[in-house]
Image (cartoon, rainbow, N blue to C red; front, top):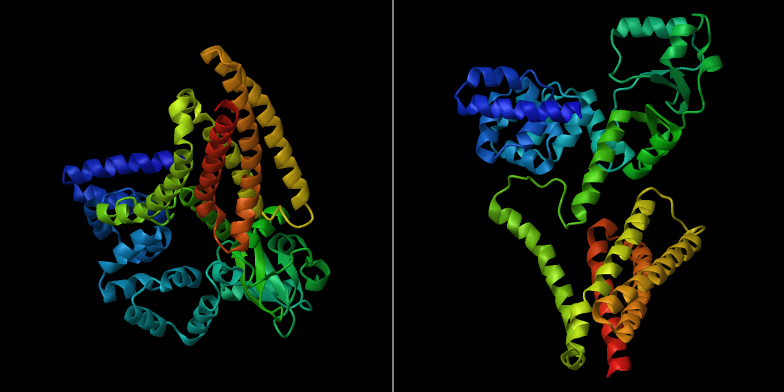
Length: 449
């Protein structure tokens, strides 16, 4: 909360300085911030002010800021930079950060950046780029410290003093054999607290299991969460250590997944620029508005089938929205729970039937309870037990169907390789609207006509 408040306060102060023309003060303020804070400020500014702010950032910090900003904001900043400026910004960056930016660079600039690296760094960068960005290999940092199991702590300490530094965020070193295959891990705390003549193999930990480079990022998050890791080795198919993942990389994945779930529910991309041009933003949102319109027409066509019934019993039109509305809420509750379970890997063939039974039972219990409530309320409102009983039956049916739909839609979409967070809500709304109208009006036509 303090960081968010600090960013908001900085944004207000920065705008005041820009509006009053105090560019020197604004420049000093912006370059005293962390790159992540600068990135949040850039994302919070309209395009014109963003361009002014970008010009104030020190050139040696530009690369670190580009790593932190959202993809669309980054693309806009890169488009406005000269090739020489881009190359200078990439100089001295950590290889894992450089790999994150590499795909967004113009082809000619990317090649020049690659050629500016020494041969070893070129090979290490190519190693990271060879993996999917949403895999352990795409997340890993290739800056690691490896030691042999048959040496003493004194040898390791001497080696570290000779190197003079260790990679940031290092809490353990990886123990490997002569072929660089992972054997175990040596915590820095054990290096500092054991006798210098101690052999590595006698105090190394074998509890830190390596993560295969092709492991999906969601699984990496699960490993860190359930094993309380701060860092972990990444290995290739031959169990050779190729890099490491640290908890800060995992936090970034968690944040991205949370933003993806939130934005996808509305058919949007978490990387969209809040200050993108109006026409561009309208075009993006138009797609899902169009999809929703099609589903609305489908629901309307169901209502049209019972037009004669509505003409004769106008009271049905007054109560008609209640059934699909309640079904939509109930279905979304099941949909959210199942989508979350899929994301966390909590649902599989062994428990899917139990979860289905539970969701159906919840739908049935809520359907029975709220049906009584709505029937009583309808009678008190209109004095008609027949209408009250009709809407109660329709609501009970729709709540059970909504629970079934909320359970099955995410699983079906996942099997079809479609993101449940993106399309699940639209499909569910269509189902609950169509079933809600059909049961309510269908029962009305059958029982009251």
